[in-house]
Image (tube, rainbow, N blue to C red; front, side):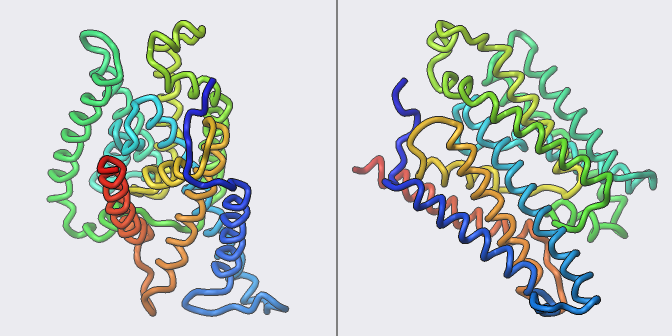
Length: 323
């Protein structure tokens, strides 16, 4: 099989080493920088507590970035659309609606409601997308419809939650924080699901071919595609149920990786997850340190970075078409 992706970088190992170096630098910066600077050499007991808090956040941000990147990469491959992430299937809107309903009904835990909302949205998308047949285009259109309906429901309920509007907005924008033991278990499950996706790298390589070619190579096209979509959506919904909605990371990281990687999805998963983890970790450091006395939502920083990426993406596309 010929190379699936032909990146513009000649030495992938050098880029990988640079990415890992940047990740290590970000790790030490994340631990030492903040509203209160901490010495990493002979820290006091109070500083050790703060270091644990920051280490928790750094690991959390890294996992979130890696999971969102892996799920988006899978969805981009099966839909053949490089601007797709888990939000396409209504997962993010479902999580937000679950959170808003939890606040409206004053019951909890809100994370459970958010996860349930994501699952209901996913089931609705699959059900609607299977009417009159089943293909990727129907599923994408169904996701758009479900997103539209859920967004309207969120807006309607939010009108009655004006006293909690700030909390809803902060969660909608996405916010990295320390996690409890139960939330850590959920994150581990999302990581396991990502490893399931990585284990299907060869199938994803084949799915870049036409449907007829993939089936001739022994792939059950329909079941494989819907299995990959379901696993990706579930992993994304687990993250969204805890930390809210993060835009652009899932879109940006795989596309950056495609500029580097020459080969198949196994290497693409590696580079995408590292880039996604790095982007989220850097964004969290900026969110914690950019404004004195205030911690802005990590999602705001991610969204700004994503806007810059989209400008570059469209510029590079126009340059490729003109050449």
